[in-house]
Image 1 (cartoon, helix red, strand yellow):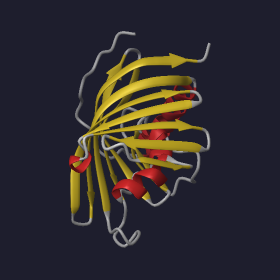
Image 2 (cartoon, helix red, strand yellow):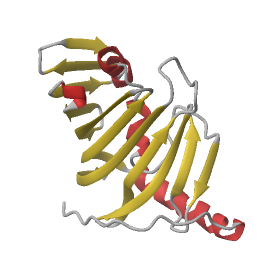
Image 3 (cartoon, one colour):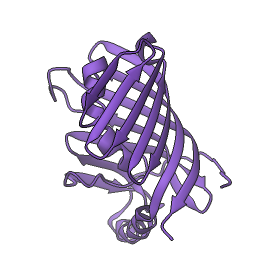
Length: 203
């Protein structure tokens, strides 16, 4: 599948009249996203939790019942390989350490003390709300896509979108938790989605 990447200036807050149009556009977009069954991404991710900061390169392949995630350079630990099946996640690092759990968020916290909501992130990087939590607050841009979503204790800000074949998908995201969200302190996650590929839809 050919990929066309482009960055764009993120739209300003819209008026109520434009918001009505945006809700319709977002409904159409969410229908298209719902038909996506598989994708691959390459992304640059910066994580800041309290006084702990780091950056990683992430390769993520999502299939209908399986995810494979490779992280390079998290806090000097080399490569981390994560396999995910429904109800089971497994992490192995370059030292051979093996960690098992029910979710990616759980095993990443065990290994690095990161709060990264991977189970929700697979929806947020597509520009739609996660299914597990109600939307507490949201705003739209003039293109009809979300400019921000608040749910599950996280605020997701969409700073730019990009054209990927015939659809628009997020390019830059900023995730953050409020102060005192948990004992780890405020967490900020910056994501730049450098490449989308192998996007598949239901037939």
